[in-house]
Image 1: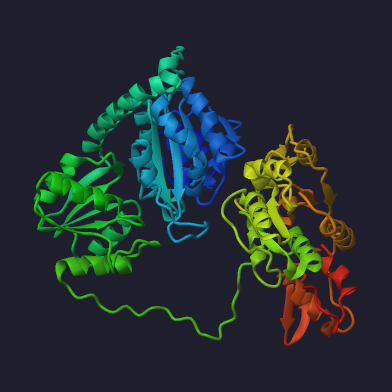
Image 2 (image 1 turned 90 degrees about the vertical axis):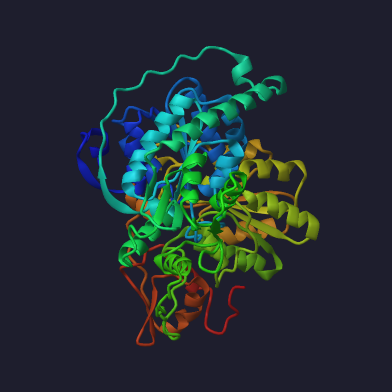
Length: 613
């Protein structure tokens, strides 16, 4: 999507991703300051702002991590500018420290925090439900279910935030972020003037004496937000009957589909909560009072269920409330199959048995794999050749996490972004075993630096391998502080990774991981040393290199001589360019990147020779 997001007039309709619609909605709300740390499923939002930033009426940055992103945007809203911060759900954990206090300190210019949750763990290490952060921090919460709502709620959340001077949570899920649908645009505003900042330490500096009255004011703002929720156009009631359904988020779509497909639209009551926190208690109580039975349809945690049960008890409303159970589990994404079962169970109807798609047992498996030519493959192979199964491998968040698969088996545990160094150091200290920690360049800047400093300060015995592929590859090739080239040109202020590590107290060794002999030599020398050590395995991601026009033009590898002699190399590297055609080993020239790493290994590994461990 191009400049239409900046220029299209009110009334125009375009087909947008939910994430693109969020960008347009924020622009309609007058956003002037956008920060982020990219993370799927949120990445297209900041990528869209980045792409349009030269022409947009806002400042944009890919911040070094989510905490910094929120703090930078927090400063901007204190200076009076409407701000948007985007991240995936686990990123809010990183930003939670400033978030909890920012709710006290206020957001005079307005501030939206986009939390893109991931039910089903499509691209994440957990399924946490960030609606709980809204309750924890006292943040009004909007939950869009369509692309149109993504646009409208982003706009209205920013306007509400600016009105209340309170941060607002815009909580999406993967299906909503990546839905594509028609979006009718609203009017583009005049550039909002910054609210002037008046020094007032008692209002903005949360020392204990001032934090206590700040909390009082926070609760007062929440009460105003509750009044807004009572009349919000995103909280709607329809239908009739004694059986009701209350739904939020993407679950609203599944419920709507079931009712329409089964001819039940209008025959049951439905309350959809688009502005789901603070609860519109009066509207919910009125809904409960008209029902004999109510089913709460929400993905992940029973957040609404528990609050609505408490509300019914407090208001002495006699109604059966059905929530989490066999049809509506506490994990994973919902679908019309399980929502239909819940609807039919509530109505006393039988649910037809649905035949599930069966996958033939002999169907070839295609596990996720590192790309052809990926320098991480070479780094993993070399580390395994030197350290084998004797070492324990601490991994981190990035596409290189795929190193946990055979043949490399180079990931024994993983906690979160940046944890490979810290957790690896702790494991080494507790176990006395050799530990190799893998971390990407972007992840190192994000939250690996502090772990390195700790390793130096306490002389932890750990080898740290920084897999520097010159981009943030996993989330879409966004820039990070150390890159020199982005898809939009040169980075004018790259951070020198080697100098940064030296400043932390270690002189790193840098190698091209595709140079097998040089990498083995460096690793072998490190294997004989103790204490914290750093190897920078630096070579650009081939996909990114092609996108920025820096890819080396090399011919693809090809098989010469006896193909059987290459089978050990095939099994040792698992490169997706390798293929078996009618039982004969070959190389797919269309997939091969021409890195020639396999050619180097073929000279060392012969049939019958012991395979690299």
